Length: 81
Length: 145
Image (tube, rainbow over all chains, first blue to last red; front, side, top):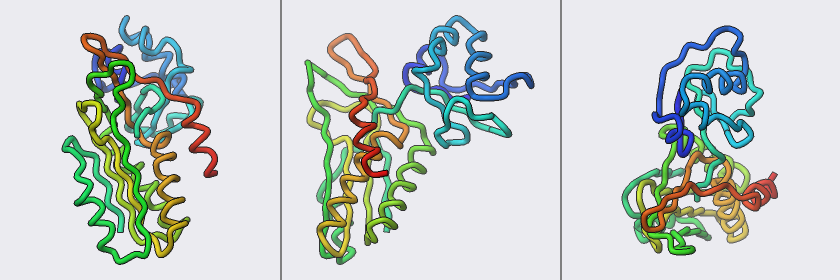
């Protein structure tokens, strides 16, 4: 897992290894599962509508199946430029 | 010719523009974005997603090369701490004629705003806040669909 911006600050780390159970199928499922890891996760991941995601460095909607993803990132909507 | 750079160093306009002009095109267009000092901003911090950022910028540059038949594209984005007035982003396009150069330059900055993983945090004195995405940026990006 990779976290950026206020998601990273809330979780308390920019990176962690996780091994979710089979019931975790989509990115949205993963967010719900990760939220139970700590109080910081719970706060940062409380509102999925404010989160965006990437699987293996490509933006994806939250209902996307994880499949054989190796790298999943969660972050706020982007604000570059 | 595509040049993409995500860098903590200041953006050198002379070097970047000369790099695009060297391709011998008939028209060069460029966009420079600078840090605004809105409402007392004292520092802007730019975070990004290493690896994905560079890939996203190259993908945008390739799309513009194909769509407008460009000769060269340069996209430079600064990361890390910046002060008001600093250059944060620079885009230049080279084409045979002005319409392609100007349109593709507008396309690239509009799409960079929504398609590249950067996040801004503004500091005002002792307090810092992450900048929220704007709906107007989504609309500007979608007009190119």
